[in-house]
Every structure is written in structure tokens, then in C-alpha cells.
Amino acid sequence: MNIVVPIKQVPETSNVKMDPETGTMIRDGVESIINPLDLYAIEIAIQLKEKFGGKVTAVTMGPPAANKALKEAIAMGCDEGVLVSDRKFAGADTWSTAYVLVKAIERIGEVDLVVAGERATDGDTGQVGPNIAAAMNLPLATYVSKVESLTENSMTVERLTEEGYEKLQLPLPALLTVVKEISYPRLPTLRGKQRAKITDIPTYTVADLDVEENNLGLKGSPTRVVKIETPKVTRGGKILKVVDDQSLNEAVDNLIAFMKMKEII
Image (tube, rainbow, N blue to C red; front, side):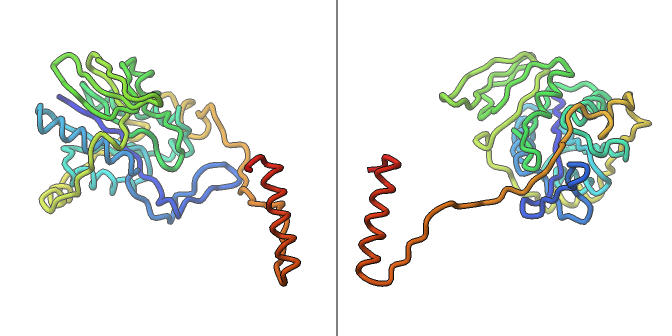
């Protein structure tokens, strides 16, 4: 079974910065990590490989520094990694990102299963996985919390919904997006780190992929961030200072009146 896991390198939550002119994220000089939710996709892909055999390939689109994320995925247990990197990909929205990843997956070869994280913590849209499934015409199950069974031609999964759990059977090849409940990510092992260090990771550029340049990067993105604003927290409350018994009674009376007005009491 050949499994592909699209992963993303994201800034640590405390280091997220946006360019007010372009509406895109500033990544230069910012410490980055594997998207935490992608770690669960890596884990379940490795578990399926260990149980049923096959190969797991991690793929990411980003700058050359994203190679670090692929090395970590290999240290965890992925067999191979593919970096998709070209300046022409910069500024891509979810649609353009999925378009390029689909072309990369097609170049990787025949795939039985694509496993992605529920969403990325930087954009928080949850759109790339379903976009890949739509472009590749793959059956899709989102918010998967458990893989119940897997055969040569199909798999049964349990997905998390607002009402509870839903069981689905999908023909293969298929695409899953997974949630935290599916498993607990393992840590990279020393042997895994040693293997990652010597593993050669190929880089796919525009020249290596069958892409239309009008669909790439900021120019090829149908959605655009038009304006960025920092929310301001304002409170129009009334401040009552208690300095003596009289002001204390007034403060209590005001509080009771306010709670009655809001129908709290």
C-alpha cells in the first residue's frame, strides 16, 4: 500500500506575522514546526504501513527550509519525503496549494491512500485536503477519528461529527483528513534520525511538474486577503469605586440593577 501524507511547515503560534500589504504570512526568519495536526496523519499512516505493508511518503510545499519538516517525518517513520519548492509557488491560497500538491502526488506515482491533517494551524481553513480529493476525484472522509478495517479495495472509517460518530466505507484509493482522536503521534527515534540524516529528499520545481503557471502562487490564487486588522478589545463598562459604606451600597445596587437588566437574575 502506497500512502502519501501532505504536511505543512507552520510558524509556532506565538510567532505568526502577517504582511499588511499582500495579506500573506511572513515566514522568513520565523521558527517553524510541522503543523501539529499533521503529526496525527503521519502517525496513522505509519501504523497502517506497519500493519499492512507498503510505503509512506511525506510531501510538503514550501521554501527550502521546509526540508527540515520532511526530515522529521522520516525520523518518525515515513519512508520518503518530497519537497515541492519554487518561488513561483509563493503566496498560494488553499486552491493553488492543492493544485500543486496534486501534481506532485501524480508525479510520485500510484497512490492507494492520501492522509492529511484536519487543518493547518496557520490558515485554519481545512480546505487543502478536500481540494486535493476533488482534484484527484478521490472518495473523501473528513474528521476521521478511527480506521476500523482495511482491505485491498476498500476501508471502513469512523468520523467525528457534531452529533456523534459516523461510520463510512470508502473504495480505494481515497483521501482522509484526520482528527486528534485517531492516535497519539510517536516521537522520532535515534535510528529514525540517523536514517533521516542520510535520506536524499528530491525537490520538485515548476520545471518538474505538469502545471499551468497561471494557476501558481499569488497570481493563480482565486481568493485573496484584502485587509488585515488587529482586533481591539474595548469595554464600555462602568467603573464603581468603593471607598466607604455608602459607595459600597451604591455599587451593590448598581450590580443588582445591571444583572436584572441582562435577565441574569
